[in-house]
Amino acid sequence: MISLAGKAAVVTGGSRGIGAATVKLFARAGADVVFSYRRDREAATQVGQEARKHGTRIESFKADSGSMADAKRLIEFARDRLGRIDILVANAGVWNSEDITIEHLTERDWDEMVRVNLKGVYTVIHFTIPHMISQGGGRIVAVSSVAGQRGTPLHSHYSATKGGVISLAKALSAELAGHNILVNCVAPGFVDTDILKPASKDKWKRWLAAYPLNRVATPEEVAGPILFAVSDLATFITGEVINVNGGSFLCG
Image (tube, one colour):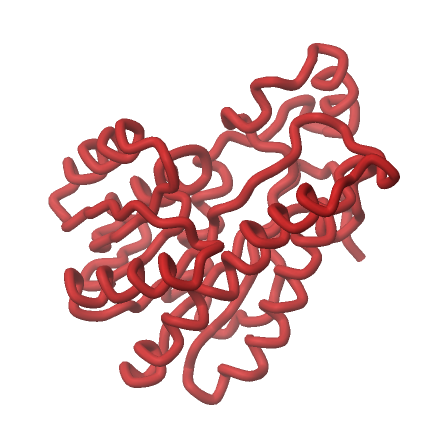
């Protein structure tokens, strides 16, 4: 088991899906964790209760990481409660469950996707970096998507944001390397979370046809590579995209 004993982590979007699985796995590995949630306090409470069974400090904080003010409050809260921030997982994001062609994609659709999925990664990194620099290092993982590498038709604004996350992480990996801060991405394909629940049976059939494993990932199968990326097994990995897509997209 990878150990994060003595480490302090922040996970955005930690009340469900990949974020919730990451919070629980980090706690199991020995980390103290502050995680954010946007709306569902009940789900956040449940995640916190499950994660605390491993004996580490786990706290939730209501924040919209697409807001500069909220992101600042989140990071300040985490720093005050945990004393330091060794790890940041920028996971919070949204996806359009309904297909939208570019001519029907509204400015409001575009702006909200960019605000949450791209700006929301920038904001938390922006406020975390001074703490990591003063501590002498840290680890950042931004959760992107296979859509950011190949593009997904009818989800163009989502694809654009996830591609932006990859480029941001690559730029920051070079910018921050001198401060011993490693920055990587994890890029899942489809994951069995509540975001996909509204999808029709026909869509599921079409999606699964692209997966050699004939299934999508579980949240836990994405949380594992995130744990690896922030662990002492990955001390010479930065600026990379760890693909977790079940062979659905083989990157060159």
